[in-house]
Amino acid sequence: MGKEAIILKNAEFDFNLFQAYILERIKNVDWNVDNNSDKPKLAREEQVEVKAYADANGDAPGSMWCTLYLSDYWVSQIEATCGCKVYPEFYLWNFLKYKKLHLHKDVNTFGYGRNSAGVIPIQEEFIINIHDDSEEHNIVHRQQYGPGHVLLLNNTEYFHSGDVISDTRISLHFYLDLILPKKEDGKWSMQELLDKGKTKDEIDRDKL
Image: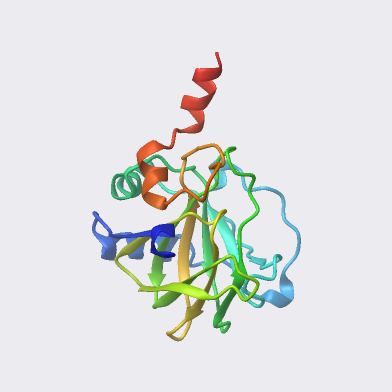
């Protein structure tokens, strides 16, 4: 129980090259939380935000993130590993000195896209915990992963938390372009989302 919420894959691309590419892209990002302020939405042409946001949801207080876009080549490599299309915006999450991802379930409305997430660790190791729906939210599955892995997660139906087990955590986050209606009985496993989910474009075409 709980393991069905995730799929852990090995990156089907040169991870060392990808890691160097990402670290080069974010080398000028300002991770100083004291200087954090509101910023306009990143334009596609700007490629990467150079001013990071503090975590505003309380999932990992003290951590920061910024938005970036990747080259078409790297997007295609990520999609090949995931086995599905992904949304074009990527989010670099830097935990800095913070060590905990608090229990939560993401609130994106199920059936409208952005209901499942992908995570590519750039530096350091992390443990994700999947919790049940009881009042105690017991941990029912734990998975350690790190650089060289790609994690897929049904993050809108399963409660999850996590623990940084290295000095810090820097990871790339994105949404999978998979849409299914809310399940009448139970939850979709991550594998079911991959097997049965449709892209937003496919859903829009079906409505025509």
